Image (spheres, rainbow, N blue to C red):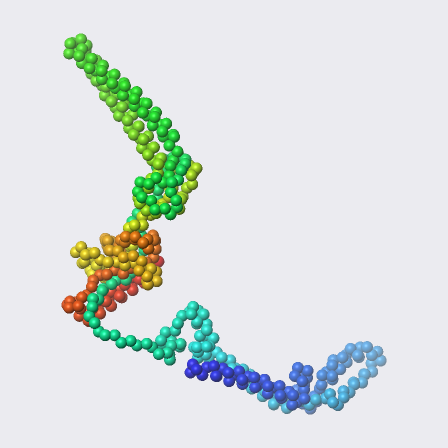
Length: 438
């Protein structure tokens, strides 16, 4: 039926054209020109266009004739009077034309014309589908031969793999903030640079804290001198007390003064250490190794400890992890080798699930199941030496749960098919839930 649609549509168009030609031939045979003749329904008294024009002008002529005498009507020449065709024939021709138009429209809009390979419906589907190829059972592949290959039966290992969707998550994502209030004078990193832990990233003006440090060191020196004098006096008083030359109360007072100075010296030392630490904080260093992002503040700005954006964000890329989910039905197959200490291989693929990005191992399983989705989170770590994984990247993961080897009792065909089918269904259900969550 699909191949007959264009021929049926062509017949309808040719029929419509023949109907219009017959209609014009009928007008020519009657001797009238289409669109110029106005006929009355009374065939006994046909009136031409000239007579109608004269009749229409008679009221105006009567108004102009003051005597009230009717003016004679001019008689048209005999050659201008045309006879009309019988009314029945004139009625049949439009009806035939209308029927042919309806038949042509029905053939054009019939459902089989939409499914034809060259029809408008197929062209519209091709535009909407973005040039998708029709499958073997589709309109374009009904008569196409399908390739068939012959392969020999061999024994081999059959891996049991769980497919899932995951997100690349860095092991460390640190926002570097200042611990002092001051003017940012220098920036020692480039955006996108790989830095190591302890590298200097920026410098805050250290002069106010240097001055405070020297002031604290002066106070410490003064209190240390007072402590030294108090200790010498205490020794003298103790000697005099042994000779019974002074009262014991004076010796006790001097001993308390010595302890007072010792406390002051400890407080001064703490102040000195605080200002030294401030000078250290004036040099902003990288807390972790990783890749720095875009600079959040430029040199010359006054930074404070309350800034939420910080100076820069450092993200650890090597190693990196991928967090993915799987159905709770797969927990038994995952936890058994994981608890036994087996390193379970995980491969990360790109969004199209065609290119392998990195290979790693399963690190851990979350401690609870999400009751809303019936899934559990897992974390796999990757060395990421080629930097194929980027933070927050969407990836497809394939977790190797087990390998069924030849000769194993688990190599029973029916059992293997049931296991693989159940895992595939669970993986697809988890992917649908993840897509719905995203």
